[in-house]
Amino acid sequence: MALNPQLFPNGMPVPFVNEMFVFAREGVEFEIDKIPGTHGGNVKAKGTIYMSNVRMVFVANKPVGSFGAFDMPLLFVRGEKFNQPIFFCNNISGSVDPVVPDGEHRALYSPHSFKILFKEGGCGTFVPLFFNLIASVRQYSQHSAAQFAASQAAPRVDPLQAAQTPVDEMMRSAYVDPNDPTRIFLQQPVQESQLRRRTYQSQPAEHSM
Image (tube, rainbow, N blue to C red):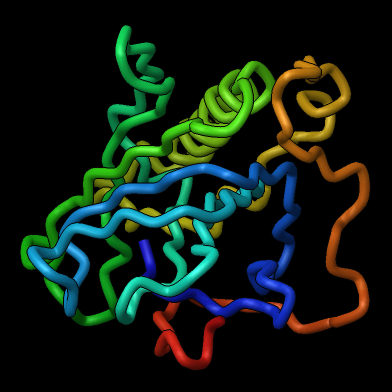
């Protein structure tokens, strides 16, 4: 993950090289833990989830302290689950491993727990797309990792390798639920800029919103 990734002035995340945004869902509530500089490390905010072939990015409608956005590489998401509680709204929960800076030891960075709550409208489009996209990314990653099976040392997982995952066919056959306000991008939403990111790095909140 990366706290406060780079955003365009309209709130769209600045894409990585070869990154393709697939869909976005406004009006969700997002919960995340272990955020430095916040009370108890827990954050709850309303905003928009953007999904690409590399990551999902939550962008808050209003910053909560130093928290303005949160970036989660799809290859680092674990234990994702769709929950349908009787007395509360439908939600997706899971955990995400942090992106460890070069030279740092992974043992010093523990996973974050997250929850995406659908409080405005249905989720019949978002949920299957979410799980299918993560499954496609993992399948491609496992295929690539098999090419290095002869090596005794496990290769370091590069979250940007997910950009090579083919998602066109999945999107062409996506089911659209009329009760779900999720927006599917038939063309990339940011074309006026050639700005592209090449590495993960956190940005101060005041430069991200």
